[in-house]
Amino acid sequence: MKNKIKVFRAMHDLTQEELAQKVGVTRQTIISIEKERYEPSLSLAFKLAYHFNVSIEELFLFNE
Image (cartoon, rainbow, N blue to C red; front, top):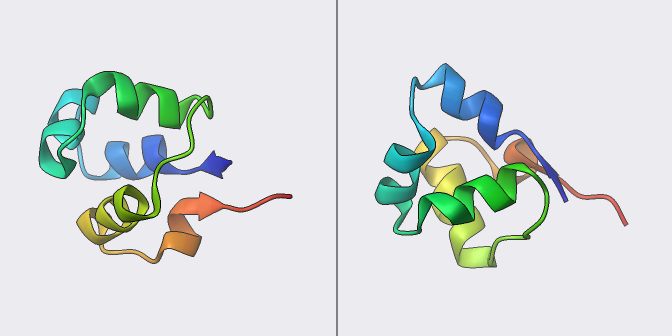
């Protein structure tokens, strides 16, 4: 699933490690999501969207 996490991270001047700590996951999880190797759980997707104050649809682009 495509996402804009890297873009929003840059806009908020956050490292992967800082974002990982804020949402309660490892840096490796953030790396995997950004590289589209891992699709986050619904709860993690909500945490990420909430942290950036955007909707899930703005952060993740669903493609079948």
